[in-house]
Amino acid sequence: MASAVEYKGLKAGYHCGYCDSKEGKASCGMWAHSMTVRDYQDLIDRGWRRSGKYVYKPVMNQTCCPQYTIRCRPLHFQPSKSHKKVLKKMLKFLAKGEISKGNCEDEPMDSTMDDAVAGDFALINKLDIRCDLKTLSDDLKESFESEDMKGKNSKKDESSELIQSQDVEQKLGSGEPSHLVKVHTVPKPGKGADLSKPPCRKAKEIRKERKRLKLMQQNPAGELEGFQAQSQPPSLFPPKAKSNQPKSLEDLILESLPEDASHKLEVRLVPVSFEDPEFKSSFSQSFSLYVKYQMAIHQDPPDECGKTEFTRFLCSSPLEAENSHNGPDCGYGSFHQQYWLDGKIIAVGVIDILPYCVSSVYLYYDPDYSFLSLGVYSALREIAFTRQLHEKASQLSYYYMGFYIHSCPKMKYKGQYRPSDLLCPETYVWVPIEQCLPSLENSKYCRFNQDPEAVDEGRCKEPDRLQVFHKKAIMPYGVYKKHQKDPSEEASVLQYASLVGQACSERMLLFRN
Image (cartoon, rainbow, N blue to C red; front, side, top):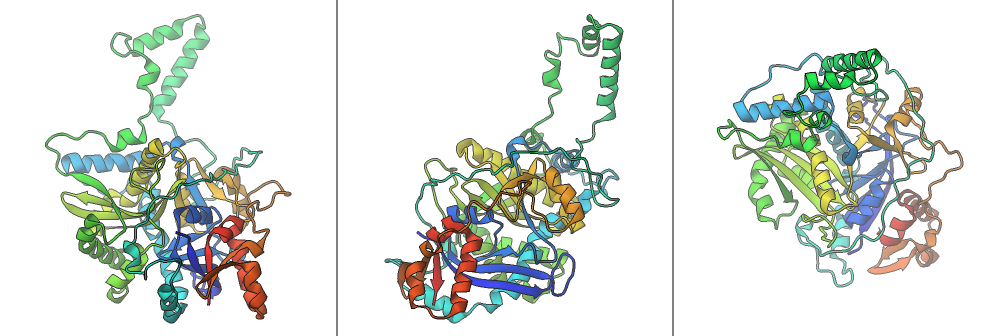
């Protein structure tokens, strides 16, 4: 199955939910009738993002709040102090039913993190749906769906289609810059933690370190061993270093609960397909949770939280389900990760599983359980899930968190999931976030690649090879353009080619009517 898209062009001068500018937002978009996971992986590595079946790319040097694609490296991820507090809070609630009263003073991100994680895609997607998707022609959509594409049956419910495996052949390069620079910048007051500094250490650890150094100075020959033996008898605690190893993310999440635990939490991965019995049976409960969340957290009126909006927004995906012999057991595609507490859904994380990453799409949860910091908790679970998938599919090793918006204080929390990288908006290579922060302090829009000679290696160099679907026939753009006299048609196709890159332009079918 080939990806089939309709390019909608540039949409500029509409409301931004981040800075509240009335005419500052600008993005290019396309409607994806179907899309392979390989193509979508390549697109998000060029700054694209999906909202339902609408795939869009911010015009970074024009939009009021530049949105940089951010990815976390889960294989090297270590939970921070605040992350551990969220996980412990959940364990205490499950074990004893304890409910935390308010946020700790040393956990300033906690209250905003929940809203930001949950509200991130709500802002982007709601705006793009209202401003872009309503301009789509229903007649055009129907005419496309009725066309016979190489023996493909007329489309039924697109969200229910499954497709057999297609091996992923091409591994994406990391694009790490060759010269990394250590930067030490102090954030402005109220702008969050300094990401260039190491995490804080406990006072107890610092005291132990001082005592050990003092003993070494007094007797370098061997009194240090006496200190070690005094603080930790070898017969009871062999290898001190091992006992001091920090708990892994998995240890913190899956810590055993007592047999008489107050609550039971179960996380289920459900394919987004109305043919899947589990998805179908839980749809009503999941939809009710979505309505409750949107009305309470985002103050949406009831008429904007209907079943149609929910299905189009979170249950309709262009991604074709695929399976591969060297891929994860669950396959690739779009999924709902449901959090069941005592037999009831309290949160749903919408994710895409792609050849090289787990991509977070959206989260909605029961506001009655806000005290559990479900936005942070679900992000940590998704990072751990990525690590789990990596064990079977070694190439799947990144967790994409959507967009990082440095100019919006509420969206800067994503930089706390370290180590992480930002995508250079000009050369599309990944650059460690620490190297990007000094530039972002000076300018909203930045080129992160430090090499002035570097260019976009994946750019479209041969537009005539772009694949066009026209009048039920597939042809190269070089053939198609010979029959076109409208100069705006060529400008639109070339703009599309420059944004999707050479590889995608040759694989995806660009629908022209």
